[in-house]
Amino acid sequence: MVEIINTGSELLIGRTLNTHQQWLCRRLSDLGYTVGRQTAVPDTADAIAQATTESLSRAELVIVTGGLGPTSDDLTRDRIAALVGVPLVEDPAVVAHIEAFFTARKRVTPARTRVQAQVPQGARVLTNSHGTAPGLALKISPNPFHRDRTTSWLILLPGPPRELRPMFDTEVVPLLQHELPVAGGYLATTFKTTGLGESLVEERVADPLAQLVHAGLELGYCARVSEVEVRLAARGADGPRLVETAARIVQETLGPLIFSQNGNDLETVVVRTLTRLRRTLVVAESCTGGLLGHRITNVPGASAVFLGGWITYSNAAKVRDLGVPPATIDADGAVSEAVANEMAAGARRTSGADYALAITGIAGPSGGSEAKPVGTAFVALATSAGAKARRVLHPYDRETFKFATSQYALDMLRRELLRETREESPG
Ligand code: AMP
Ligand code: MG
Image 1 (cartoon, protein in one colour):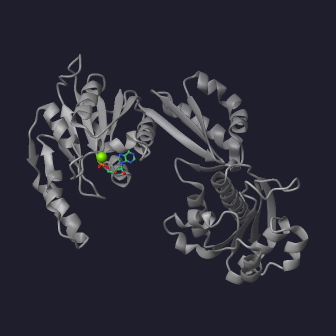
Image 2: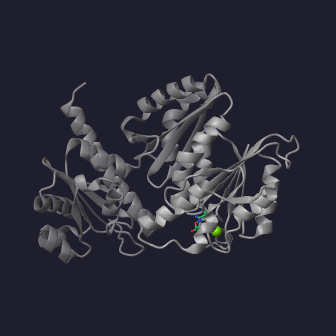
Image 3: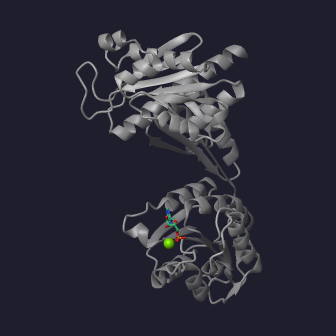
C-alpha cells in the first residue's frame, strides 16, 4: 500500500491547489499501485514528522512532497533524517549539480542553496533535471514504525510540479519497478474520446465489455469538458489478455470518437497529424478570444504547421481583417453560419494556409436570444473544398464555453484529416 504526504502550508490555506495529489495518484494507479491514503500537512516539523510516522506504520511506500528547498520553511529533509535516525552528509555530486545549475544560468550560486546538498546518510539521490533540490529515496529496513517491521521506502520529492513530475517519471518509476514491483503484474490503458457524453459512451461499450468485466477487467469512465476517458485495467496473469481484448472492442465500438490512446490531448493529436501530412493551419476566433491558438501553440513543434491567427472580436475587425462582407453580418448577425464560413474562408484566403478554423458565438451571460441562446456557437472549417460551418450549443460559464467550443473546432479538423488520410490510403 502507498501513502502520499503533501507538505506545504499554502495547500491548507487554499493558496495553492494540491496538484501533486492528483498527479501522483494517477501515475501510481496507472502503474498498478494502490494509494490508500493521502495527507496534506503544514510546513511545521511536528506535522511532517507525525504524518510520516503514521504513514510508515501502515505503508510500504511513502511519498512526501515539498519542503526540500533552501528557505527556512523547508524542513522535510532535516525532520525526516532525524526521524529515521540518520545524519545528514554533504553530497559532493549534488554540490556540483547545484553549481552547474547556476553557472548555466549565468548566476552566482546563493550560499544557502548548498543546504540542498545535505543528504540523509545512505539515501539514494534522485536527480533534479529542472531545479537544484534533489529528490531522496530512503530504504527503511527494518521499518521500526511498522508492526511487522518489514521494509518500507520513503521517497521525498521537490514541491514545484515542473521539478517533481519529470523526476517521478525518470527516477522514481524505475526505482519502484525494481524495488517494489507490482505483484502479479498490472496493465492499464486509457482512451480519450470527444463528441459523445459520458453516459452515451458507457451505453456503447458497457454491454460488449460486460463479460470481460465479469472476468476481472476494471472499467472506468472519466468525464471532462467535451472529453470522456475510458480506462481499462486488469491485474494478474490474465490481465494483458483482458485489457487487449477490451481495447479492441472499445476501438471497434467507439471508432473515430477516440482521438488518442494513453495520453495525447486533442491539440497534440491535431498538430502531429498536420505535421505528418505537411499541412498548415490558421485560426480566426471571436468568442474564444485566442484560446484555440493558445492550445495549438502549447504543443511543441506547432510552428511547423501553425501560421497564425486573428482575434476578431468586433464586427469591424471581422470585416477589416478577414473580409467578412458587412451585408452578411447585417443580414444574419455576427453569430451565424454565414459569418463563420466567411471568417474561415477569409482567413484561409489571406494566409494561404491549407486549413482555417473559425469560431463565432455567444459566451453569455447576456446577448442570447430565443433563436440563438447563450452558448450558441458556429464553428467553421475552410479547406480547398470550401468552408463548412456547424452549429453547437455549449450553455456553460464563459471559460467552459470557450474550452468546449475550441475542443469542437479542433475535433472538426481532426475528423477532416482522418477522412482525407482514409481517402488517400484506401484499405
Ligand atoms: P516547496 O519545495 O515545498 O518549497 O514548494 C515549492 C513550490 O512548489 C510551492 O511554492 C508551490 O508553488 C509548489 N508546490 C508545492 N507543493 C505543491 C502541491 N502539492 N501541489 C502543487 N504545487 C505545489
Ligand atoms: Mg513548501
